[in-house]
Image 1: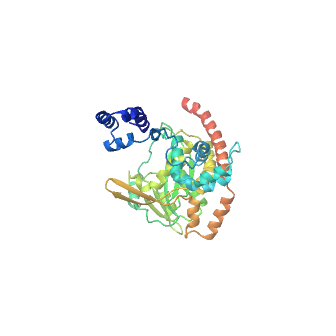
Image 2: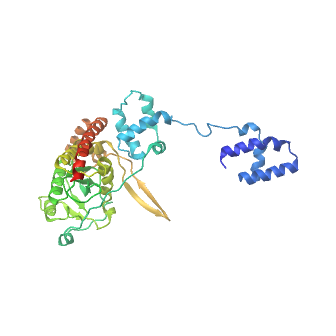
Image 3: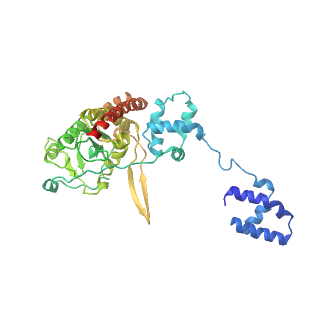
Length: 392
């Protein structure tokens, strides 16, 4: 029985109970405790109170510090611009984004800004719960084993929790094949720094190792730190002699390792980015054609990667303990990859100055606006190609 129903029941029998004799009160109490499940002594105390105690209290509980109806449109707009990140990450991102925020109707005031900055992650989560859409489709897994002889001489790395500086990368590919694996289709090559979360994405026209290696070279030229190690899965696009020679036969060799087959948790950092950085942007459509691949790379390099690396905080798992059947996880404070690099003692002051200079030239809302325009153009061109491809 709900509290409102119990209160209504109390009001209905209160007058009859007060006028009843001892025997009648006992009967009323028996009925009342059976219906409501309350303790008999507590029921006697409730029925002996004045009738005003049973009045409805619409404002019961602690008063709300925020007007959710007033703040919800701004939270929704910011959340959508921040790529629908979690409440804790959004809490950390608000001080970075709010100085640039301007709504279309110019109704956003200083009071709204102060309320959003004071709002806790739990309150943000309650607001986001009302507006969150949680439908996530799934795609295909196309990892195929590389050469057997080559794999035997590439060491397996499974533990990465002791990494304390930038330069240790995990790599993977995402197939833009739609619902068919036939023919040629684009793929996205993803490289993620384990320490900072800095992520670089490049699109290639197919899964040939020559294109994947070219994407890795292009990615390396734009990283703000030197590469110390690379960790790939067992796919043939990564496990090949050309890629091994590129990383290991240089003046300062890079540690070239791989994960265990069928153990995606060995590459948990980059596997997470497959959805947050690739699928959430281009979805599960089939993408073919060199001109669309070129357009994807423009979006990745100029808009998408700067948005995530400079303005969207992430959390790192510090430790995980098991207590009985429960697994308790402890995370660090949400920070952007840019902030983690500035705090790193392994990054040179010249590299930090270059990062800061680029950060001062960026505006997250300008990046979002340009991103929406580029995506609209990209998907219109993609839809024009699809009928021809289906006919073929």
